[in-house]
Image (cartoon, one colour):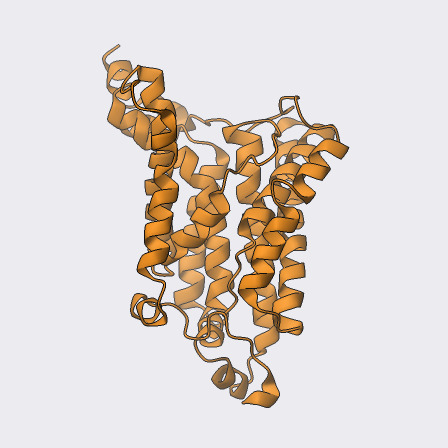
Length: 326
């Protein structure tokens, strides 16, 4: 009883919920970080998350298999769907050298809440049905009931633990491996990287597609865990928060994790307060808007090129590269 009361305190509940709500942001932000490290700005993250959410939900409804296999297959489908959308963006901005901001915005409009994702959801008759399978807490080694740390660290879903592994893997990749160092060189000075024999186009394509795949998985977090169903516009602007989160984290994967959980706490705050009957006189929209207010503040703070450079933005971010123009 004592343990249950400790784990039911507001602080523990909000931190555990921050991890839950922050996980899709973390996946999407890590994907955006990889794309931006290569010099490609991807503002189509929201559209990629929505397509990943709808296709992941479709897959889990259609796969007739054991729960673990079905969920793994759904994540794979969501990743492929997100990467497919990213391929469109990559072709436009890397091969055709289209404006990266315009391309990303167009992709979000095309695939967003009033576009492809909603069409797929309606055409595949996905609305109104709960997910056949959904991710839930694993209660590792029965430690989920430990005071404070139990619900935060040991009773999360496989998606949370996968995101932690990704943070570690991407951190090591960027700092300790040759391909990771090559990627950073491509984002800082593609001309110099090209002169060293690094295939700038291949690195940009590869990491933009990886970014789209992670955005697709981030979208699937919504339809397979947070709200295990399909509703148009399910992600609710999380893709935009993920883009700002990369800046907030200074293009570092470890700080992406911290920032994702901070934004996740703001996302979880309205439902947590409502469940406890606190501050009922304040409209829930006030609290729901907090993550987006923070996003706007972050984007305004780093709106100048000088600010981005001081924060550690890749020098060639958003700049097309053509070998003949060296």
